[in-house]
Image 1 (cartoon, one colour):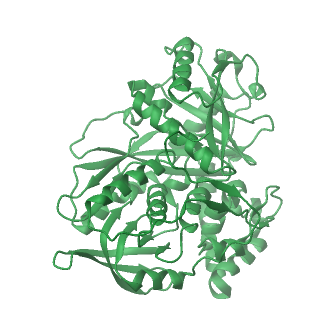
Image 2 (cartoon, rainbow, N blue to C red):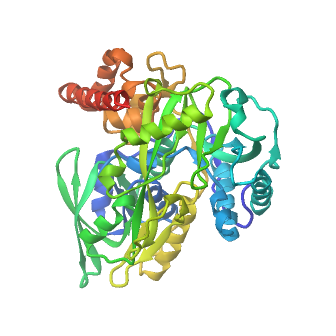
Image 3 (spheres, rainbow, N blue to C red):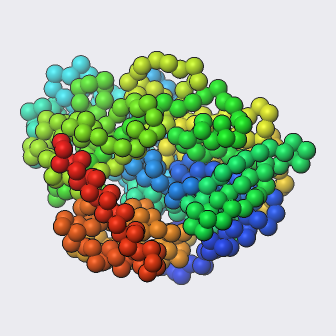
Length: 517
């Protein structure tokens, strides 16, 4: 049931024809029509949640992202909706309670898109962490979370136990969390595309190139560049929301904003392996190091194995998996799984950066798991601007409501709120190669989901690039002809071959990395 005392959006799934969304031209026309109330920069999970909340409040809002919606970090999660179990380490019961409510809220509001997921926690024999302590913590977690999930219990046998090196582990503990049904990028992109229209517009592949605060006019003067057409436009907005994620401070520098916070960057890499038929739940393996764990989660034909947890010095380093990342994952697989995975087993890789909010003066060398995952919302002291630090799927709607509350301090026009009920329309499907799981139809994605490029479709509107080897091309480029046909849908006859060539280069680089391990 949804958390008590809060208004919730009611999601229903119906097979109806949706109203055609605005075209890219329509979005530009809406943005230029008059001054914006808010410009949101960044179409990841935080920016998407803020856009959705402001759209439902009736604000004139434009969201822009220099790449696709939900690219980079937001497309590389573990697909899990955690209720804040990690915060029990520091006895932060209030945060655990809040995140449990948010998890259950997502389950209630997004039926068909978020599902309950069984977890089996596997305590390591000889670990300093006693099984009875973990069991007690899981029961406290269940109680703090409002007793809405299944009672945590010890289970001597479960369906996927044959996958394990059983002698390494004590009797497992079962509990419940939640997980995304399709993918993180499809889920988050839906928050954006479902709200586009009228005074609410969103543009992917569009950069904010300059931003200047005009104190006399009390407006931000903003220059945007559309990467699809090369055209630039000058717009104005009363407020700017920086949801740039790992790029937040770079964006602040460009806009002349200051902040007492910054991000520590923690790289997380997952390896997608063929999913064993017996794997129906998430397995959580104690690693015995730093109090950390590694998970195995079923996702269609693959199983997500990971993640790594390493602090990196730069954004560029964080988005590039390396041999050390893969060796760690393979080593953990060899220790914990009866059939040790090999590099050639990997179907694809997922790599993202967790932006962890810290004070600007922070200089400590700490294992990233010990740094809080809480988000921070910072209001600039001199200009009407808000910067978001941190953030994750579970807490993103809560973050967005906090941002909406902050807007009360600004002189924005009163607008009529939109109704919060929504219809989730199952998309028409497309069969790709030998993939048994149907994928969203590419024409539907192009026309209804702001899908602009071949990569947008393969990686974020569908799961083809994650579920089929070599970014969807298949071993030996078995799907090259089908891929070329898809490229024509998005790039036309003149740009299709260049898009396929770029895809082949990405696949070749990934193959070379895997072969080097």
